[in-house]
Image (cartoon, rainbow over all chains, first blue to last red; front, side):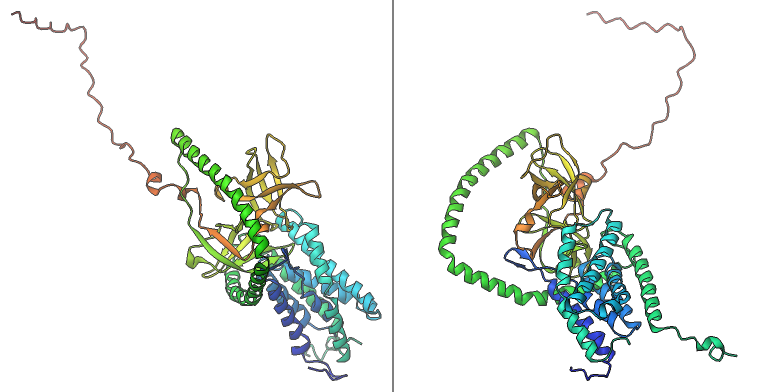
Length: 171
Length: 323
């Protein structure tokens, strides 16, 4: 669907589209496969909309959608319920608080902001897991998931361009 | 005067504030959910167990369907590779076979000696455990949760707590069961704890997952220092797992902590075997565990007290008859 400049996208497109795409990608990457003896990485695709939704006009829907996306990840991956909603909300909150700073940046500057949001999500995950399990998870595994998630930035950039074309950025 | 008509009705909070308030509100609700669900431990038998079972029941067939084309592709690639590498594989297999023949002779000799010593000591071995083969259809391998969904559930006798083996060693244990699917908590999960022993020294430790590929050996207690390459087996302590299941070999981590390179890392991950092991009572025959015939509690009435007369001469014994 091609957005008409100046007309906001309907919620079914800007909200449900990225939500369902990230859920489908998470399921696809959860297949038990190895390539050349190595397991595929497990990026958090929901971090893409969590970051990009901070740049549309403020609304209640992104928060609720992120809770749904996080609960879906918890159920799919077998983690404690509430873990990934909190991680995604933390990333979204950071991006929303730094929206004005990031809006004037180019591709690499926004990528740095996206990486910072991913890092905050991972930090929240480490803290909650440490509280629950009694010890912190291995930082090497955390770093790999952070790196795999940060590598998804081109998808977030594409979403931001789409929202910009549809004049959905806050004025 | 209604609120809308009053001066308060003109107040329009910025949308950004409302959005921020929504984030804070749902974060508090999620934190409460995390605390409620987290209080039930790794097995998570709490109030949300039904939702988990339902989600697993949906995720398993979807994951299985998605995994099928890549699996077929992998099998096809393996078949093509095997065709082109048949010569070198044949040479390697011949060498393995020659080596295995030596081991076979040695194993037969040891088995015969073992049986003789068991007979001398009067030892009894554990009966073989029933086993269910299953296919892993969903694999979570992130730092915060390491689990798999297997396509065998309570309809095939799988129960929570059952140990799960891969092709080459222990993988984890069952923490959730639905009718056709079960969730395996891997040894690498941050909430996984498994009692293990060092085969060489008989030392004990708790295998503690941390989300990485090599779980740590915590509470290590052994009279002899651990060495690289020591075999690690399940100890059976606590009755959680049967004794003697292969786990891996000891390695020194980059952080100086003793860790275990899991045997299951060197085998395909899509097939697992679930041991139908509940506890050690199933290793004995029920008849032997049943209470034996105990002496009755009924007692005989006390003997009547002897007569109070004392110093009475006993009657003389009759004289033997003379022929």
